[in-house]
Length: 188
Image (cartoon, rainbow, N blue to C red; front, top):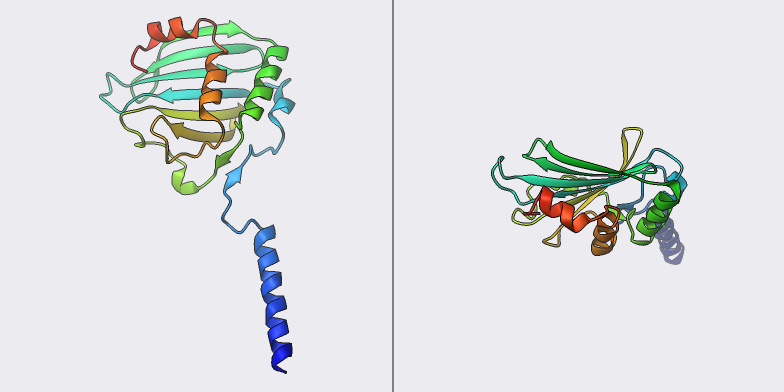
């Protein structure tokens, strides 16, 4: 009788373990865009990938952001001032579907869609106050399909892809990025 009860308890624990594993167990909060589609499938759409570099936390008059948006038909780089994000300078360039497709492939390989969806880390505000915060977004039709962030300070972060590679890929989409960034915002 004791063996039968022990066997039933063991089977019950195994079933519970399987259910926890199948449902994700709550331990893995990594996710990809809501669509669950590979980035390359957006190459012919109006979806855009965006990097926002938010500078050190300082006075309203001194605060700066740089935002690079890459889409199928254009690439834009904007300099923003203050915490409300007033655009102070904007440059746009034409893009092609082939170029956008290559960019999306590269982002996919850089882990752009890998991130931590922990709600406690949803907002990057206040982290790395003397450095920069990098916000990675993928947007289609005004809907944010993905939003992860990292900092120049390291952890915490929600972006789990290759930070250096992803930053370089975005910056490489802007012709003469180094010259432009000096004109836009010498402190970021």
